[in-house]
Image (cartoon, rainbow, N blue to C red; front, side):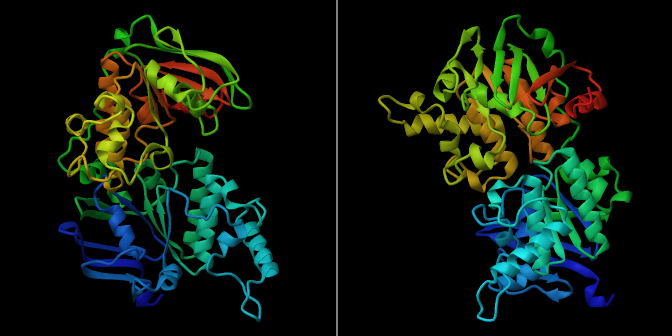
Length: 502
């Protein structure tokens, strides 16, 4: 290997400002060819900004980026960037209404002698690629029909077809089941053997120890650690990520809140049935109790959450709030009955990214902010300032667009909006998904406080950290409740139940 090929990607002395705010300070990173490098840090540490620089989304104010031993292309040379680096994001980056084949060869279609797209070759070469990856889908299938795992394969394959040998994976397992994660890791290892280099971004520390060789830790826009993972135990890694913050897992242990649960259920689900999704679900959550609902993707857990929120109408069954049955499939009625809901995906169904923090926080309580359909800006401002302080949202003001906040602060705002109406029942789907350790800790404290105020809290998740704050855990598998675990459960038993081994 020649000297210029030693590193797949390098950044030296990088500074980056957005207006007067400097977000990266003298950042340096060097990733050897064939490495799997973890990039970790709390939300707001500067990871996304560094990825934007490494992929040519914007330029640095100072410093140098090198890819494959050569200076990075100019920002206008998009093809040059595509040939050297690709990023597979947590959100969709395939074009949903193009076919799988068209996505695989996007901007790289085989052409005939007249310069037109050669449809026959496009199909044949796509079939060869799909066979090579073991992907059992038709090349003319619309991409929106792909599963998350299949979409990721298409994006990685497309990057390789365009010539890139350096691939950035941004929270790639956030929506994958464990067996899909294992297959992804097998593919990463196979590609590493062929000289492909990965930069792997994840909040799941157990994953980076499983798949990565080295780690770069960022905090407050600086690189604070750069090491082999074998030389950096988890406790030291966490310490580097959070600095002086006491990452002791606060919020995971909630004391004896279960003993304070009242006898009357705050949420009572009876005989809930939905064709091909749910079968005779009976579940109660008492006032002052936090219950976890655990299951794989597609197990039906999210359908239950959506039914309680009024987003879907089941075929049969009842839902009662504080003993009063509610209309099914009616969001307004459920909200009026006292249900607060936090959706699983803040990007798709949780936030209005171009609207302000204040408008996002108060959308569910606008009638309380003024008479005759008018909103008092004074009342709204007072409420928003109070929520920002109570939730610990890091922002310049309530008028700042919420899309500018880090993921952890956006998630706090979603929970805050659900709490704004002082609900009787709080339903949270994956409430800490994709956020850093400090934000998780803050969200756990917010959830515990809601329970301590007497709310019935339902946490829908398969994340063991999220389930650890619950007084008990109910497991759903293929649409049926199969096991119940009291506080003090064993991780292996819960995971086995989630996987359907019981």
